[in-house]
Image (cartoon, rainbow, N blue to C red):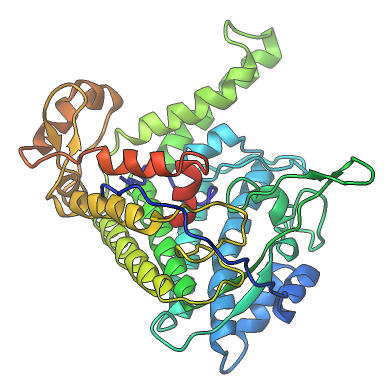
Amino acid sequence: MRGLAFPLILALTALPAQAQPQQAQPQPVKPSALSRDIAEKGIAPVLARLQALPAPTPEERFAIAGLEFLGAVESAWRWRVRHGITPFGAALFGFSTELPQTVTPQPMPPEALAEQTEATLAAMARSRAALEGLAGGEDFGLAISLGDLWFDLDGDGRRAPGEGAAELLEGVVWSGSSAPDPDTGKPVPPALPVIRFDRADAAWLAAYTHLVSGGAELLLAFDPTPSLQKVFATRARIDESRRAGGEGVLPPMMDDAIDPLAIAIDMLRHQPDAGRTRAARAHWRQTIAENRRFWTLVGQETDNAGEWIPNDRQVSATGIAFPPGTGIAWQAVLADGEALLAGDRTVPFWRGPLGIDLAAWLDNPAPLPVDGVIQGWALADYFSEAPPVSPENFRRFSDMLFETGPFLAMVMLN
């Protein structure tokens, strides 16, 4: 999901032309009682109730895992609203999306980003614990309506306008457009999808928790707190001078771009924690393994009811079109990512026919100052003769999903 896809996550078949098969109409699905419970009470209260169960069913275990994940999203977005963090600043640290600013922003402590990221890591671990064994067990089905999901952005325990998942995630995990009423001609809002999650989706969610965990570990490897302290202290002096004597050459509206960039650039000068970069690499390898398991399981499905990500015989209930061959094309992209993480392939260097060994950097990292990365001296120890990853697989994947949008597909497919 955009908003928890932390920064610096690297996701790098030729597919024969295929005729579009005739797809059956999806079977209608009714929301579960648990879905309605979320609509009434919200994520945190329902999660607490499920966690107290002595022997949760597979459906309830998947719900625990999903609500842990969504609770992490809710927490990150609430953190943004509390501190008034703009989409641009948030995008550099993996928390982007437009959010309604419903409360008066409070000053952000420099340690808050690291603390929020650690909380996300813990939530991902709890989600994986609830998923343990589900993908390899008996099938189950948990139907959740997108209209029932909401994020308590202001923390008041009540659903308010702008807090619905359908509003916040349109164009991210679902696609809907208004159609004119045949009688009045006025636009009619699209019906919100009901998704029936099953054991294949347990593998998908496990993959996503590893993807997010890898990004979180990488962010923490560079320790953002000292950079935040430096930038915040300087910003306080600048603001004090403005109050006393007016604006400088650059208008204050530039602050929301300059300060986050300064934080990110300064962070990259830090010596990364090798334990965390190695953990990131391990998580991303698990992302690929769980994603492959998902495609194996989803390929075995014969129903067509409330699908999240469909096989070639199904239709996604989200309204997003997944052309035939999506799974094959995405696994080719995953294979490139796996080769990068193993050191069998390299990242092409932008100034010449050299490769950058990402695996070697993750195993034994060095600082990445922007000037050294652009010129090359900061990467020289990681130049490799291993063949670079070809952009061809990703280009074919992008071409196939041109109408859907490759970015949207990557968010969904992880």
